[in-house]
Image (tube, rainbow, N blue to C red):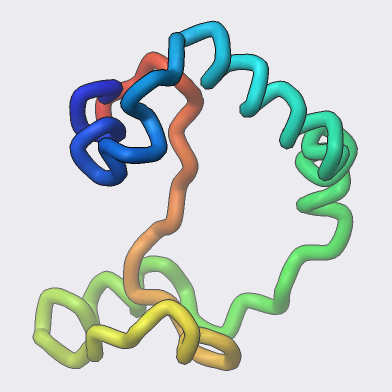
Amino acid sequence: MLPDLYAEDPDFYRNMRIQDLAQGIHRLIRQHQLPQLMLSAFDVLPEMKMTPHHAWQRQIKGEVETIELENLVGRISANMILPYPPGFRC
């Protein structure tokens, strides 16, 4: 992971130690209160517009579109969006 991260922005990471990276991430977590946001993320769930089975059937029939992230609002996802915790291969 770290070589890939470095390759994306070598100038940013060139003189950074792993401790600096970890402290920066920790600072962002605290600054944006991410634990509280994560706990409240599922307080209100959206209404299901289509069953997962129906969405999968549409996908295997090629009845789906690839859409840019900024245009997803109001659309129905044909795929599961699943964040993986650290340590899991995606």
